[in-house]
Length: 424
Image 1 (cartoon, rainbow, N blue to C red):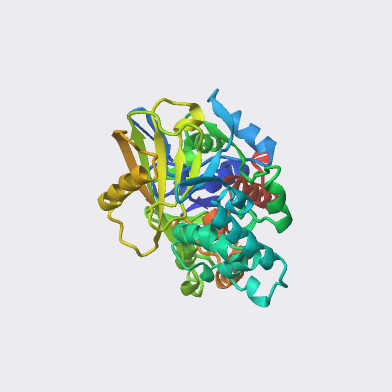
Image 2: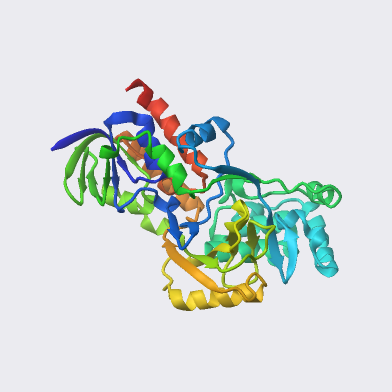
């Protein structure tokens, strides 16, 4: 039986970062025929699209420099993000709760009235019960019902009362009454990803940059993990059995833990899936926007991104996202028809002609973070770590995190293990 020091499951950002950190003793298994996970890029008919929109934002400049230095002269732009909300045909700056003064007068009055009384009432115990009650308690009924609840229910494809109040962590744009009032005079809509970087070749360039630090012979494509014997440190794959000293997985936790044989409560794990349409048109559309959010339940998609406005290309290039329940049937042709119809309804498409397209279902897309899932993941990850098994990344930890977070997580694990590629 072949022996490896570190067996890594998944050749996306997390898996490749782990392999780069842990050095030549690592072997990467990838079920797909190519690396990248959800950061794959598709080039078709002169358009460049990702599986979904990845606008990269870094809090640690050294990580960004490390990646760009491995792109072989790839053109990488730094862009100030312009994002808006379509509210019944009115364009409102994102985030909604900080820009209620841009709403039609009666909507503004409703939002300000409810916000004021929500902010000046003692927070009850229910405020921290779940994500939905947190929104009502912090922002009042109008802001919640005009944007925060319908938009996020379209995104997560579930009742927000199912989610933990901190389900989005630092990625949720909280704002106090004082900040909202101040924003009416001096706009300050900065968010965690207000500035983003993007390579001309798409998201795959970041993946390739990480992979450049890994021996290609140590990346095994079209080979998936089947199950684990935690006691013997043996992994059975679709091709062979491997004995490992340690194992790192970025596979979705609900799927991975089922392979381990550990007793667990599978009912705590839920998620949505997202159908992404990448669409290329024959001419330019709106030129001053990168993202537009759509809270209206009459519009099938929740967000539209504009690739063409990053590099200033002369043909409109969109990604359009639709949140679906995990068990929902996906009729791509019918949903594409609705997408094109709704793009015309909201004025993004007028007399444009669709000249190129691509679609992909991401499943899981957004995991549903609940009190029960957090507890079960923490319990099981501790048991796995006792067997030398580490589940990392956005899906491996069943959480909401950024690509940079995943890279940092693999570096921290390498330090804890006392193993590092530069020392190998």
